[in-house]
Image 1 (cartoon, helix red, strand yellow):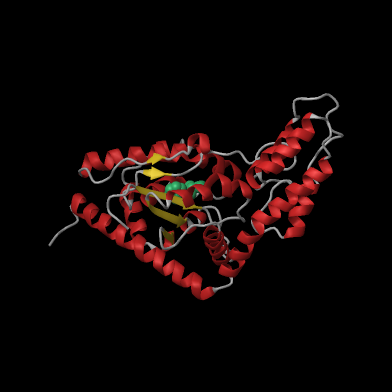
Image 2 (cartoon, protein in one colour):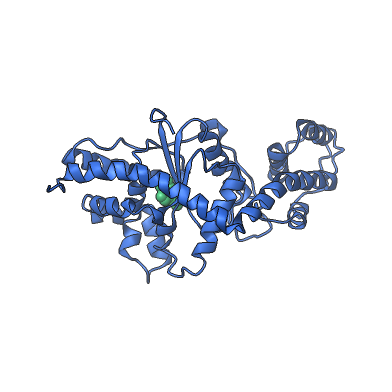
Length: 334
Ligand code: TRP
């Protein structure tokens, strides 16, 4: 990795399976960034301990999320893809930063308030200082770009505050990190039930997972809501129909889309045919990713080497930073 490229860092939660929304909203952007930037992508396994006291599934979840990200095109030779718990300097920096984070501001964090409300019996200090740990993840590599969704803006703002305090007290060590948005390239992936985006939703049929088998993909797409079709030429599309066209945009060829658009405009559209086409195009898109992810997930040796390689790169960068930090704080006695 060259020292000149801007540094990018982001964390991936090891929960749930990746779905199409995660792919187009996040992973695909990581894959693009790896060509241009020096990237650190981390599985946030320590963060998950704040809300998941049951760790029996941690290993499987970590392996799965690594396998799925690599299957989507993240290249472990181009980026540092690693587990948070493998980089112990994270914990040290987290400790220093905790001295600069105030109880009042942490308690005001929206994500903390949400979690505290959801789990009133587990309002632990780790949950309170979640944004401090996240800051440590980011600034450990002195990253300036953090590709994250809107829900993380507040954490990034807190990270900048902690950086300013650190730099003010101990000297200019850290650049301020900023959320990296792909702006107009940010694609909405609508859910199959006609409302909202794909997410880990209540309705299990509304979201396509990268791990769904071909039959499941077909079943979900065929269940999508339609109606008897337009009766007037060039009628505006109802939401649930517009969503189907939007999904086609992601995986179908331009010719195919054009044909169904024309059929719609002429009131000749047959939604059964459209959904069959969409299902087949989804299968063609998802199947290779699923198969690649499965092959990686079951290859313990490959996974171990992947994690070792990632950890080595991340530790190298972390160590350089933590030495500067100890020095700046004054923890250098001989
Ligand atoms: N908090 C992030 C989330 O919920 C995950 C995360 C952990 C993260 N550490 C990070 C994101 C560092 C960006 C940078 O998705």
